[in-house]
Image (cartoon, rainbow, N blue to C red; front, side, top):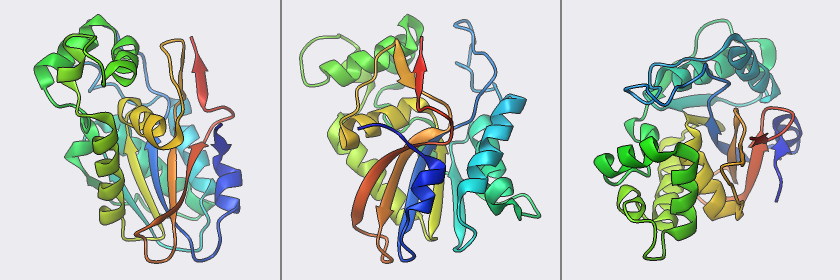
Length: 227
């Protein structure tokens, strides 16, 4: 399964369908391995803000919209820019509700997780996804919740929190990648990762309870980053 452009995805929606979009933030400034807070203070680049504005313009103007975000600033900024760009008609900064869990949703043990980060972010996430059911990768399985059950909890959280036709959840690649792995059977490696403003769109009927389909979506030209 590949990524669908946000423009094509939103254009394909039926008039009675609702969307719950779990999306990675826009392009950020560089994070160095020595950052004491692992990049929590790092914001969007100017291009990242323009990317988010462009994604907002792809969302139909017909229907209400709500925004949720990780507490991290670049995710908040992404959500606000999507709102400002939506339909090219937003006149004021949208309200964004902070969901603390979007900052570390799959983290089970913070100390173990921080050790994983120090040894390599991409390598650690991929090792978890590949080895969570095995006895390998000591320290990695302790760092994260089980993939399947926690991904289902993420879906349930999105469906329960979203109250509008369009529900935007701005978060981090570390928590979008597991959901795409679980729901869409996508595979990521340290050399082939997901791009900025890329994520997973859950489409439901008007009741907003049962997914009709789950679609990998990107707001950029490609949903992949090659290293």
